[in-house]
Image 1 (cartoon, rainbow, N blue to C red):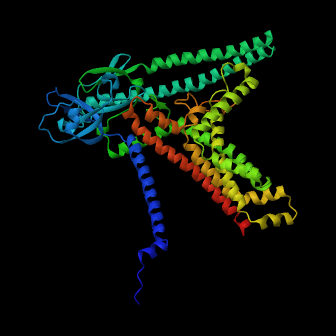
Image 2: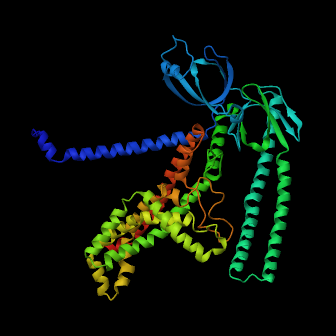
Image 3: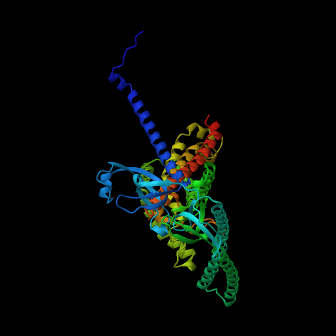
Length: 567
């Protein structure tokens, strides 16, 4: 039987085009999101791969040739006309399009810049020598060159004149690696003493100073109390002197070793081994070696502290600050949002006042986040914080305790920003509870509060968790309000440590979102910072996804647990 063919108007009226349009829009959105994630993953994670270091001769027409030692970063095709306009001296009959490559040359302390563009056509004699090494430094970025000698206390303990992998060159390299391991161990000891031991003493001395000042303000600083405090302070001073002597000894030990490196212009430089973080010969590494090194670098990125104005090292303080702020925000916003929603839905008279409040709550969800930041700065920090300082921390004034940006004010500001989401989601959940469930509970003798606590709220808990998930997703990615209420470029210590009261709500903190902004738009070394922007962006997406997955897991568990109540 022949089927009747639909006309275009009938097909449009049937609604099928809109279904296909919606499906196409969803598919395009998914492809764009996946494509974006792939882009930041490839560009960010590729940063940690130990790329080969090449040595080549570069000679532009009419210019003197010179040797280059560098890593290839990226290549683009440009027109000859564009290069001539930029001042590059090219022959008139040169190719119309030329390949241009960005090279990471390192040695910023020698050449002034560690990146540069070259034209591939004028690179010649390209090699990847085994003994060419790359070194990450605590300062001045990467170092590339040939190892010529290693010294201990100014005395040469091993040297070579070979630039290939001969026995003497490899022996000098082995001594160099041991010297770096020794310096790294001493560096960790110095860091432990400076950051933890001396930090603990400084915290105790500051606590004594504040106690003395408080007693002085209260008129209770008697000579006896003052003598006790002085005795306590002298104990810490003695401990501090001991640590200082330890430090002096460690600094003497760490500065013992140095090495001589020949860089790409043929000059040789003496450098302290203590300035090196890692040194490796990428051209001599197998794929397995490179994979092992890659994961070491990735782990360092996740667990280490930033270096070089955030363009090197890790982002652990930013990860810690982001997660801690989101958890505090969640603890604050959930009860407040649920209580507000329960009152509006279960207890408030459903008149025009309630409708106005609901409209206000919905409108609050659309207020730009920077407005919340300004409000947090004015109300929480300048008004509440200053009041708290006057009432509870007068001994610390004029230095503010809570009268300045910090973890607590940032969490409260974001809780305020996200509370409309929790209120709306909770109200939706409460409205879906069947009326007969409430009436059944009341008929069995339960009070309204018992019905609410034991029946209604458990059944609405999946909707509450949905609101919390949306709040977490928004709060973790917000940056604008945090710039006004507590986030900083570099925090000297974490807001959670071993010093009483262990969690420091008044302390400023680092945040992944602000780290992306700072590295991407405030860094003077844009080329060096670009891969870190991608890597940190990917990390922020993963952190938000993990926080959301945790909340989704809890919601699904609650949904299954109270499923029987919906029957």
